[in-house]
Image (cartoon, rainbow, N blue to C red; front, side, top):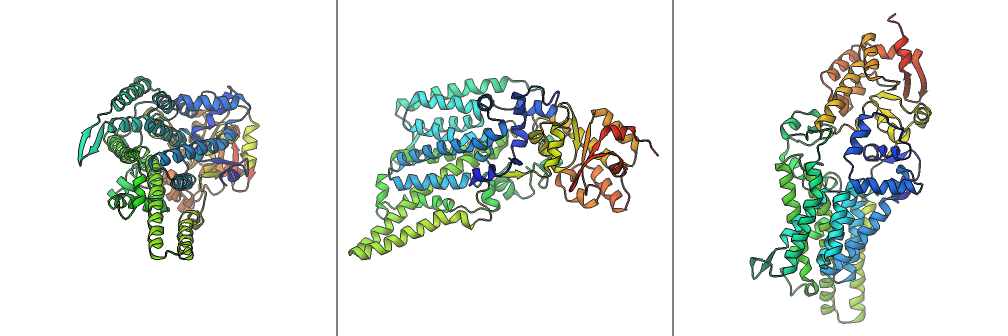
Length: 544
């Protein structure tokens, strides 16, 4: 279903492609995006293995956008296999492994992580692979996976390191004790050594776009406020600590619109384990179940450490939301089978006849099937991989036919799609305005402020100065851009103060910015809802 949506149109791309993948067009044509700040920045922050994988796809003739749409399928299949194997090691009942992998598939296709095909998509297969080989005590494969984590999504290394350390502590005889198994120390030492080596280049790397955003700077940025484009800080402590997309502990979609059945089932598991006589099938649970609390405590430890060292370890939510989805799916698979087995045993004790057992058994299996399989159909949209439908294809075709070194200025939402679909540079856009490296963000912020001021200026000379300053070739404008509601209803534009408030006041008074009067003489393409202006024409326009 996800692939069908992805390939239903050439104008459909994943939301994150517009920042993390578009620059890879350079691998096909090195002349694209010349001296482009945005492209250079996103290329510089891409992990090495992730970049190499896309290069390999391009080498066999698959363009980066198509490769991005194909990549989720193998990632999901690998994730499913390791999830099933881990569940079987914890609880060797195939039905539990099936349910766990099914639930994890449901939740991953209702989020935009694996479907994005970006670095964070790799946390699921790589973290599960690490857990599997660690539980099997296969040292070399485990170290190999750690290396892959460092190459594709380095934040995963911190979670793996936490699990390795926690395995040195065991709960025995109602007390915490150090492990007496030498292999635990061997794995920990070898794994932490590999993690250190892999993280060292990142620690020593001096970014051309630094420094990393500090907590004090972050609190002063409108884009990180609760209603900002990249919101992080919220007035509500509950939302900040638990439900924030970037700051919160839980998966964002669980708080906003999804109440996954596996969440409630997983919460029951610790309770069931206290009643071994009533839930006798739990005798099959192995000591490997200790991996579940180890995942939880490693995730929580990194979550709070990321908050303590705010933005130096990137976003705190990255250390919990992915691993919690994995943890909850496996725990739910075990809990549901314990419950249905106990129910069937209870029925067998009450109704020893064949019919008496069969009918309630089918009833329980039916309820379980409804609980698991019907859930996606109760959602407003499923799957929900966060694909974006670009509009006005004529615009992208037009820009693609222009010289490779053009620069396009636009405050339109469609500017986000131009680098991916037209392979041409934009001055700024809402999707690429990441504030985590101030050397980059200050330049983007300056560009955006200058563009906003010029678009709503009543002075032609200010517009000309802007075009000359950035060497603009074309200006893309939405047809309703000169209405006050256009600015008022756009969360990105509303952050550009005081220009946004000034523009709203001018437009509400019925005054029109100078640029609106240049639409008729200088437009080179007009589509439904959007207009492309020739910057050269604007420069040649007289004040009269």
